[in-house]
Image (cartoon, rainbow, N blue to C red; front, side):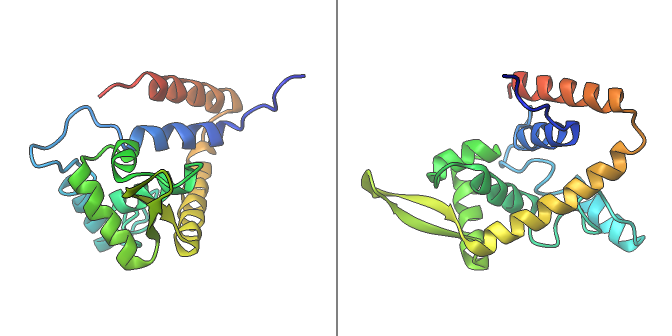
Length: 174
């Protein structure tokens, strides 16, 4: 029995998600380009000019900083709640930054802390129902944007892009 073919748009979205948290270079203070600076400037410019970026008019910041959204996405994609260090690794930030993101997520009601059943000294981070709704909304917006972008591609080009991005994501090392 053969596996169902993977939709190129799904494969591209999955590869982009895996690549988002992986940066070859980190700012000395732990801030990557998506947390401060360039991304925020592009988002402000887009808002000022009334343009929609691929993640919305505000570059994905309508619900919060891109790193908070990556955190929610990572938790939604995980098979179980993650430790702060596991979350940090999943989204490509250091542990202190992950702790601050968790607090932001808790404050917004998107994530909750819970005791680790294997070690009472540790906590795990779980997504809430509100966080899952946020994830579905963000994923839908991105899926629509990706669909619009791929409309200019042939089926073969979409499949090749999916193959190449997947290969890049699988072999990326920071």
